[in-house]
Length: 132
Image (cartoon, rainbow, N blue to C red; front, side, top):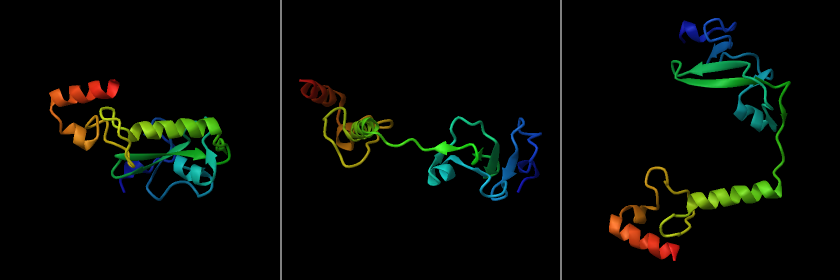
């Protein structure tokens, strides 16, 4: 543990109380977003109340007061449809229009693996066929 990671007053971290990993404030008083979600809660617009630092200061977990947290909004039919459409877009190749059972690496490859191995000329032909 680094000495700078223990700063309960926030003097060295811009006013945000800072604790090292596993030495945060007492349980049940503050929680991370993930912990709030497990309790069926969300931060509800609250500001970060404290933070937990780990891996030599490279990772930070923001803590929110549990007392001010609000219940998670219920999933509506419209939200479920929007989520399904977004997931389908992540699983569909933009070139060949094939839908896979997994999310495609669209940021790195831009298409499915077979399409990413095509030459530029073949890609243009495939894109023209998919557009027609």
